[in-house]
Length: 299
Ligand code: GRG
Image 1 (cartoon, rainbow, N blue to C red):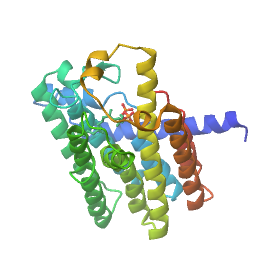
Image 2: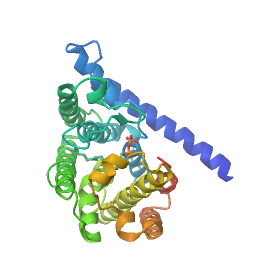
Image 3: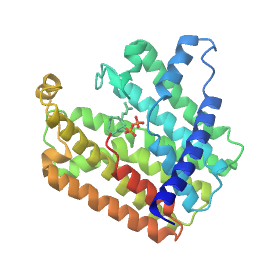
Image 4: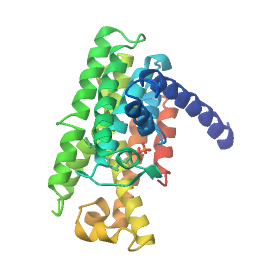
């Protein structure tokens, strides 16, 4: 197949997965007309936009393990709900205090702070509900998925990483400390996409371990790349965020490694992820495609 037709084939598969995600989201979130309307409208607002990389990782990992998409729908939706909640809370004045997200006002700006807190709370509970009510999974799989997602999102995972991040403001971290922080803050939710797919597949421990290695490499590469993109954008628009940046010193991969070495480290991690994917199956093209897609992102 030529690379153009390969790309077109992936575009079709990705659109099909994104449509499945949209249907699951629409089914689990109460209509905006449901009382209390303002809250339900804000819940839907918080879920709009976004690249849905985590949902695509669930589908790509599941596809590699031969799982039908309908057995992955609840997991794909659940991780996106947790991700959306984390962004709404991360943007709050008590955390990052951001006015814009996905190119438009953050939830607390478009609505108000109390609504944004409640939106995050409700999105989080919906994530566990969507797993609990799935008709495509057996009870043992649902329990395992709920536990894996709770661990990834909670104080030993994403929430813990956020706490460490906030406590490390104005400190210079070692590379090991920075990696550990991000393994929790952003890595845990990326890693759990692979764990959920492995649960849906009833995968062997060996396959699960290799898939987890893929997830860890992608999670860390994603964060390094995020820091690199931020650094490049900040350099291009010198002074744009100068007030905030001068007031706070934050350790980032480019600040610890230098821009070029950080880029090289991300590159090596993407390669390592692709090697892990290849060793899982000869049909890991979806995971390979996703690694390329994430590596090439510019936002
Ligand atoms: C507040 C409980 C709590 C946790 C916050 C994930 C997180 C923890 C904060 C996000 C802060 C941030 C912007 C980190 C950089 C990496 C990242 C998660 C970027 C956003 O993810 P994308 O690019 O977002 O996948 P989209 O908009 O495409 O969904």
